[in-house]
Amino acid sequence: MKAGFTALSLALLVGVVLAAAATAKPGTHVSGTYTVTDLGTTTCTSVGKSPDLLRCNTTGFLSQYSGDMTGTAVVDFTQLIDCKTGATRGKGIEIFTGTVAGIGAGTLTWHDHFRATTDCATFAVSDFVLKANHFRGSGPLAGLHGTIDFTLTDYDGTLH
Image 1: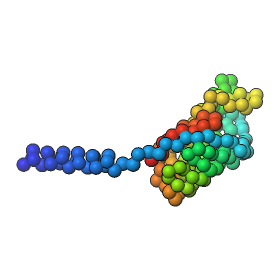
Image 2: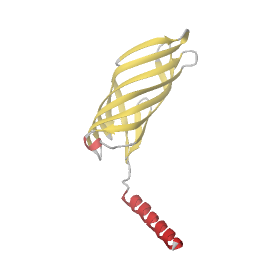
Image 3: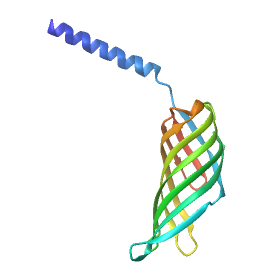
Image 4: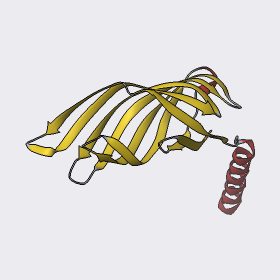
């Protein structure tokens, strides 16, 4: 009886896994470009006694999205810049209001995590790489998850 119960349990488990896989929705690929329309307000302070380490807080940074995501986003973020090496790391919260092709319109909030190289003399940024994750949404965008990767001008990712 124990062997029969184990075989039945295994068969049921396999059936549940196959049914879940068959009903899983494929992800929606999103890609396009974004343009910064307002740099917002940034304040920087030295970290500790080192004049080479800066912590910068930016609020109200605005971008206009086109492509599979059409709308406007505002982000508040904090970054740590090492002016000796140019190494920059940061994180923030971005709120997108608009439409995601194939899904619908609403608001989508996510966490930004980025790295870049910053020239502290001009504050020019290069080698920018950002990953967006931990999504929250409203309307048809509620319940989305996935990742979106960003460069200085483009985005590309998959939402489920």
